[in-house]
Image (cartoon, rainbow, N blue to C red):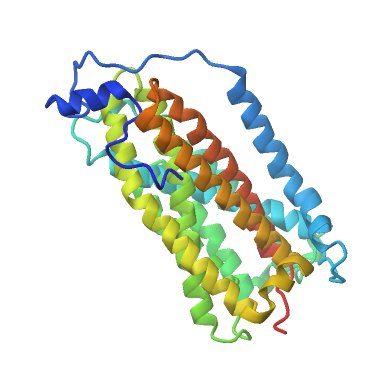
Length: 357
């Protein structure tokens, strides 16, 4: 998240100079263009590292988090973590495209006819598969199904968790249809239903004040999805337009940055409130190191701090570097770390909730 980047800090010093001279950002025909960089192996290595870490979190994360805590690992924790990570990533990609596109439409001269190729269809398919996998677990009584006869498909309609799982499957199907329509932005409605279903699922009625918890999770998850997904799509736009319309790309980044700080603040507040609901203030420090949930939460906090540091580095390069395009490197680093945050968040949903001491 480039939350600390101000609108005046464009990813190209030439664009800033043009704005200062009275040339509108994104004006066609401007002679100030960011230099094109050759593809490097760094990007491929970064992607491979992200995939490896994302795969390692569900495979190794549960045992590492539970080690020495005395808590038992629930059946299928690794699989549930992987499926929920895929689902969260699908939400980020689809809502991020809708969000960034709406920002770009507010920029005069933005070449929307040359927008990055949409990934929404692929993300929706991945979301459907992940939601079906999670629904099969619910249909088996929250156990890992080994054959079709293990699942009670009809029983999904009889339980709260089953109905929420079916809602997520149907919502991703509708989002897929929207992504293939003339108005792909309408996918935001079914995707919002997925987020609401996840917020309700995370706080069953047996919990104290479940609606309060669901409300906090709803805000937290929505802001997190827009934060990660919006940055991903904005960076794709910046990379595509860096030679043809660097000013327009800078303006989109500026619009994103204005909201990004608010998103981070909302994530922080809702995260702290949710933590205090599950860990009373006097036990937080102990549970952060002695429970699997606390350890995973601590890892997530440290990763978010790393994202903030990368955001500050990107801002510094944008404002002071002789080559402002170098800010793309820490910004891409943010996306990589955010990908790990998504995987860790998925693990957090699969671990046992700490006991209120």
